[in-house]
Image 1 (cartoon, rainbow, N blue to C red):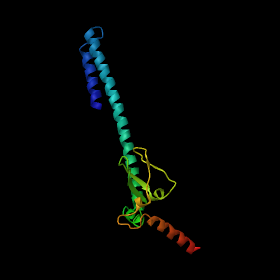
Image 2: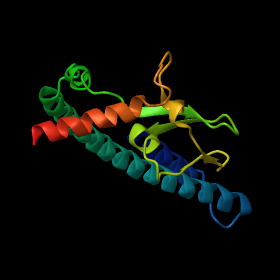
Image 3: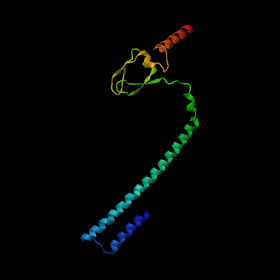
Image 4: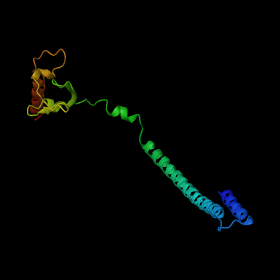
Length: 161
């Protein structure tokens, strides 16, 4: 940036050496241009200093972030996640709205709740189900398989007491 200051100073000295005065129109223009160049160079130097300060700050932030990442990665092994959910069953069931065909994912507890009303988020129609709508493929229970499950749970609860 120093070379720009030197160039502007040289041009100002040249203008003085040529006896360019503000009394003429051309002299006023040339001296105004030189003053403006000097201000531009000063502004550029300030911007360069601010940019260097910001670069230092970003580098410090990057170092801090790298340190935080290493602390976190030491405490967390990415492979641990896979084992956490192997034994869990998915409690959601996909149904299709009979009116608009929208795929809807519902918690199974809501599906088997007789008092729950299910509205399609797409067409806002009430979706009603028959007992056998939730039986799995090849089920021969006639819609009673979930009632049997509930009876088994109740029986198990009584046995534990």
